Length: 109
Image 1 (cartoon, helix red, strand yellow):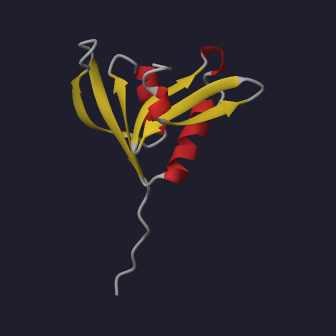
Image 2 (cartoon, rainbow, N blue to C red):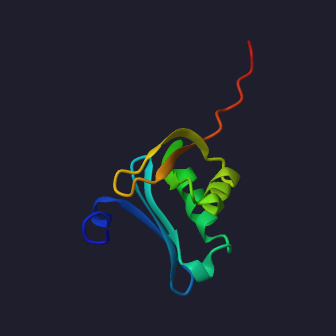
């Protein structure tokens, strides 16, 4: 992945005395979000998603249905399921999640 995919993606890194996590995306699609396991649960994933949300009005990502911890995390970050399918390479069920920036409240004339 590092040599074939990552050079083609926009990448953000959390560096807290060492690389703790990174997020890679191509346009609105998050291709990868990783946080080093010893540092999970410390806000690094949220920090990466908050940075992403400041850069784009909409974002998509896939998560494996068998990963309830990740799904719970993304739901807390307001990513919601829009499609369920099969991951080509593994045959596992994956879920497409979507986040949209809240639209401005409109006042009726």
